Length: 66
Image 1 (cartoon, rainbow, N blue to C red):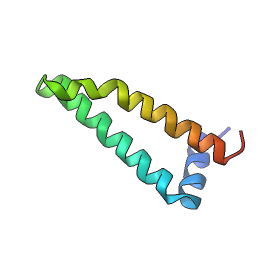
Image 2: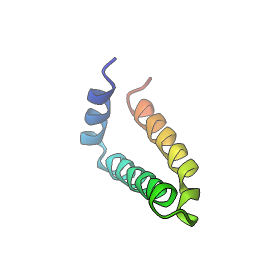
Image 3: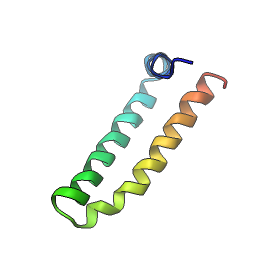
């Protein structure tokens, strides 16, 4: 199973899934910044970003019929 190829093929066919992935990455980066650089309220975004990554993975697998 080549996960990166699977993701790229779904992203090319469904651009909104790619946009969702970029939003999840941005929230994850903000949570890391909020945890390490300037501890504050942004740190709470860490768990939702992980949940968003899981939702993205299930969206990709659904479109691949797996």
